Image 1 (cartoon, rainbow, N blue to C red):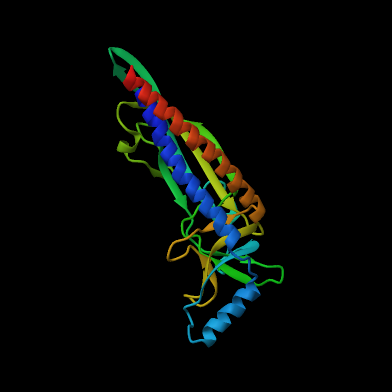
Image 2 (image 1 turned 90 degrees about the vertical axis):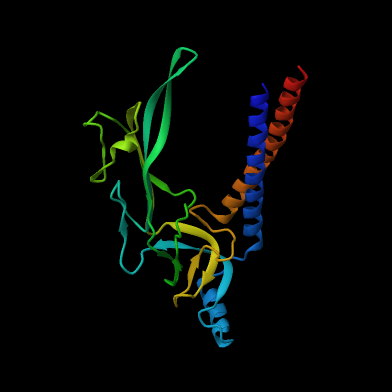
Length: 261
């Protein structure tokens, strides 16, 4: 019983840190001003006049439609969708056999065998056609479109499997386990999709670009509105606070009860 109690306390601690992060994101959205591209250009101009050309930094929220980089649109790996950003992952589902106390147990598990997030930059464009560069920086945008979510049973081909034209090494498949199949998932941002972005706008490469803050801070890219994100964080914070309190109390009671008995 004490093990269950200890796990609940550990989960409560993890939930506490997640709750703090959620609150920090909410405060960042509340405390950051939404600026138009012309406003950002004006602020950059003032920075240039003060002799800080190339050193402009401004934490801001921007809103606009996703727009391709000058080189053109990307093509996603799985669905071959034209997009400005994509991410995919492949998970192997397998079954292992374990022996405990003279009994044989089968356990289903999952491991990630392949993943990729596009690194190419893109832009947001306002109603007047003005653009602001976006540095994806490996981030996972919120509430993006999922284009692939399918499971393919493993049919066996000499102990290896081919993913995107190359065979995974033998050791990836593992030993003493049976592969059930592979789960393929993919997400994309199509051109024209409305985006809300919270980050740091800079001019290090010349044109204005919004990216992850250099000195720490939040970087949010979402297809939802700011208000929808705020509502989500408020609700999440409430659920987490209840879970943290309940997990801590129940966990301590179970640990103490086990010690006493």
